[in-house]
Amino acid sequence: MTDFGGTPELSGGASGGRVPPLERITAQAERISLLCDLLEAIADSLPSPEAGACEEAAQICRAEVHRHYEDVNTVLIPALRSRVRDNPDRARLLARIEEDLHEDATRLAELIDILGIYGAGRESPLNAEAFGYALRGFFETIRRQLSWEAEVLVPMADQVLEDGDLDIMAQRLASRDSCGPCPNAGKCGCRVTFLN
Image 1 (cartoon, helix red, strand yellow):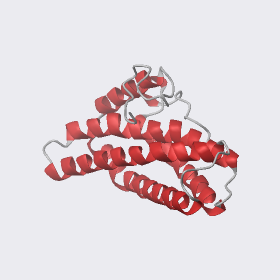
Image 2 (cartoon, one colour):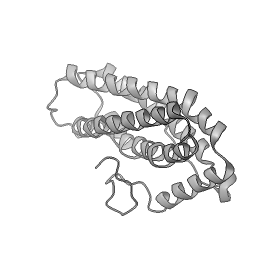
Image 3 (cartoon, helix red, strand yellow):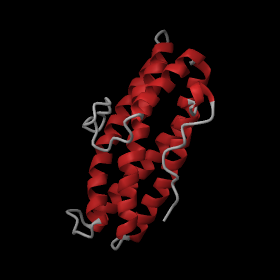
């Protein structure tokens, strides 16, 4: 199986001993890129994917991709929005990213369900061709999104965010981390509700 390394250690670094927020988001993107490779391997192995690979992919989607969407959508984008209010083009860009993330989260929930079915060795309601199509559509979209984040969103953040913004982002990430991963979105009161 692929080594995804889990959530990065949140020690050592700036912002009160925590990994700086933009580094955290970049590290998440690198791990999600590995997930895309795993999803592609699963799609290539159809109609008989390895159940363990499907279960591993479902677990990573449930925790890592969800957390990344949350970090970008509820921490990074609001910080950026506060700095680009006077720039309508950038504000529209951020609104579009939010829409895309919400749409991707909906597809993510569906994909997790199907991966879980294959991971449990049960018969899927989708035939192998439809499942392969869904997998390829998802990981290709995610790869484009990650590329876009790396080439546009993170550089924009580097350009417009100030140290105080990054400190606030680090505090928000730390408060959400205090309750751990939230695959049951919102059940712990951490305000992680993106997949509900």
